[in-house]
Length: 451
Image (cartoon, rainbow, N blue to C red):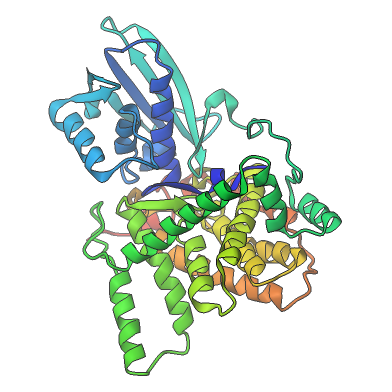
């Protein structure tokens, strides 16, 4: 089982697979260097090459080489490092500097094959004679997870801690929960307590929730254009102002609750597109769905509580882990069904649990959430996590609430199981042409005409 703290990670935008993952891989490569190199070359392959510029992969690589981490890097430190690299052609490695020219040393190679994973990067450290000191191939496998190329597909390591409820698919989850008389959240609590003390689990969960809520708040205050050249203007603040004006006039729209949820998701994904601090949930491109539904629960459900929010997060993490274990949460492998689709499934299950649903209803909600995202492509315009990504999160959040509602109105019995829908998502992703999987070579990305 994957820990809730592996699935939900605090990082920066705009992409978990193209920003967070490459930054972590670059830092891991530097940590393994036997000595200080003369220079480092980074070759980006596959989806990293096709959409890396729009996803700020080059910036992420430089920050990782400089020893920065996605969960702690500050905007000031990032600016200093990037300005130094692009202006003075140097990069810090530990306490020393090496020569670094981003236009020469970061190569977007769209021709090379990626036999193991679509998000592959080759890092090479060279001495003064251009002899190789160290060369490694890393893959960013989705959601900020990374692995050396030869390790991709191996079982996820959780420190070999024996877990009381090590379910790895939906059927096992139901069987173990019903045998123990525990909810999904109850089993996750027990699993996490095998790794950490209760107080530490609560502290970390609350910190992640706080970052999610803060991201919504910051997003509702932001103004101006998003970076990247598409001239997409932030709209969360204007949406909020119109909603508040309607409330003051006592003329709320009948679909006002949907508008609120959409607002929360849009606020998060505008922050993500701007390179702000977000929680990978399970990816950055889908980072708005879970926070939006969690905010809906916190602010608009009368029975909401902190305990309910924690159960929401643990349940959502369990569902996300099942997708990660049995399929993928990488847009470059699965398309957007593996990002927004999985996020919708996670949020639907989390809300169902927080509202008192049974374990059968939780599994049903998760299945519904994914079933109606099957086949969704990942075709970001200009390689930016903006169109259609921002609005797509709003729709994913609305679908999650609908899925939770449908499951709560039933008794949990249904014909298609969560395991079957996960298997279907995986097969659909494998069958999907690569131009629809985060390469910006098909779909909206090529049918959009920039004026």
